[in-house]
Image (tube, rainbow, N blue to C red):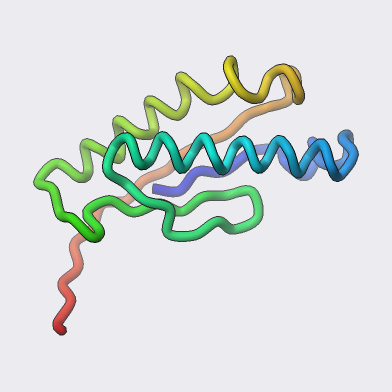
Length: 106
């Protein structure tokens, strides 16, 4: 799962660096919590984006569904509770997903 803050460059130009850092820290914390509630984990953060994986280290038959539920949970929780007070109506984010299988030999 890939989650990205849309318009973050423009938002960063309107806010002072410390305010932007605080907003992004809350976003990353919120994303981590949402992902963990659905048995996902943050693979890495890249700029204003989070790349998450499901099924690592514990594989579940419904990992793809867990990712979709995490995306829905993320969109319903993120803006009203954590970000609107600081960033107003300028806050937007998007998620995309790809399901694939991998096998690892040890």
